[in-house]
Length: 262
Image (cartoon, rainbow, N blue to C red; front, side, top):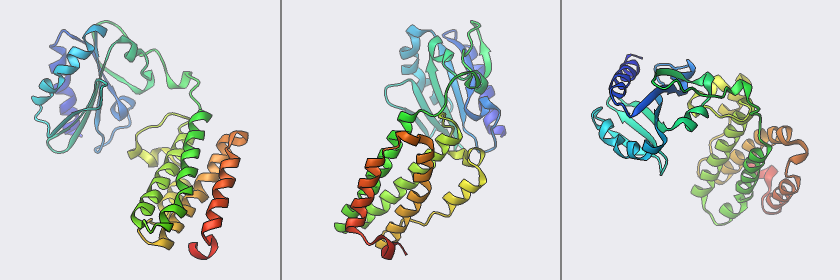
């Protein structure tokens, strides 16, 4: 991890010379102490509230001294993603004291701190938990996509149908992550740290959704077989039962699921 650590040392030294920067913290896996040789470097840069936007506007000029092959601001927020030579990934969030206070104290590591400000929260001390509204939204989207299967097959849109199978796979993974992490998702590149071995095995065993009718149906149904029991467990009485029943009635009305799914 010498490249990552060299980057951390250099950024710390460079920003420590800028009086506008009031503090610097490592976040992500380096902040949490779970980094490995494949980890990106995530940072939070603290500036005064009134200088956040002006500092962010000039950030690409600062980042250019690191010769990035990619430097991109993510929308209107003062959040930047970079790819440096050697495909070293570096993500930066710029914020004021309120944003710092909202960080998880257990998941950051201070590099310097001029004003004695610190994150105020710890995930272990917060009532994070699973938000049933979020889970229900995921479930409704899963059932909506699943219910589109007769449409795309009826139109012969096998490429779109295969994409739908991929989306169901992703929603299934997201739901399992959300359950395992109790409502706080970590990076998607750390599934083996998050999910139990039997769930990893189940996801790995999902059939591919390539652009062929029977394959698409198998992929959709295999995702449903993992997703829906987990969703029922998480939501209980809040599960959208009427939507699920309507979805299955729609599928059975247009597809011979037993024959076509093998």
